[in-house]
Image 1 (tube, rainbow, N blue to C red):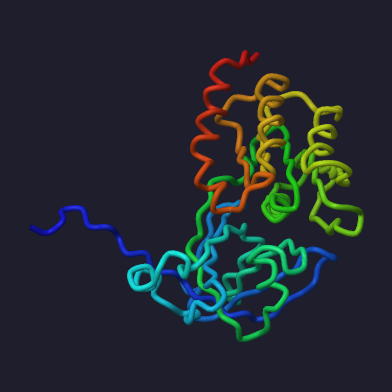
Image 2 (image 1 turned 90 degrees about the vertical axis):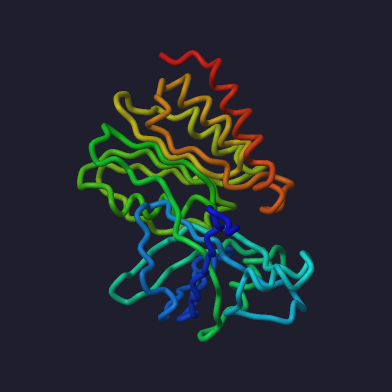
Length: 280
């Protein structure tokens, strides 16, 4: 008997490197294009893609059939998945812009971005996403580290004229700051990391003189700092859950694979904690 609910086959898109650019000492921008991106249509400012990287010596390269690879080869030869926020999508040119934080040969995606040259190919799933700043909000709070910077930058570009926003971005130092589209009502505070990731960011937000009134919140980055900031906006600012976009993009001491496996349990713990919060 045929399976009444067959598993839907997921077909990745294929992008071709058009150009690359070194934005800061630790950020490389890669622009992808090509017919493989036809129909790509991100709907949110935090849209993301899942990039597929064959491990060294795997014996295959993009384009490849993911399910065929997983059926034929042992798990250690399966492609590694890494999640990246869409920095920009130019529908007219058919170009997808992704920004990679790089630290030499550390990791998977960063070294790929450093070595990427026009004509190289990369497979990806997506886009996904859920957040776009509410144009009717009284003000906006956006906070995060380098991993959240593309989504925050994209959000600022769609804010209506005169919109008020308080933006906090933690980066390694002044050399990692980027130009942002900040209107007259937008205040950007760059925070330079001096201790563990997220410590300075949390301190900056909690110590800031923030507006009152209806706020739409976007807080993404290292999981520990995100949890602290979620607690603050829920209890200190009294923000209802439906006005929050809060997520731990990564966690200290975890690879993405391990963090994605642990994240459901972490989210459940955060939800349980929130049940006990007293919100004004």
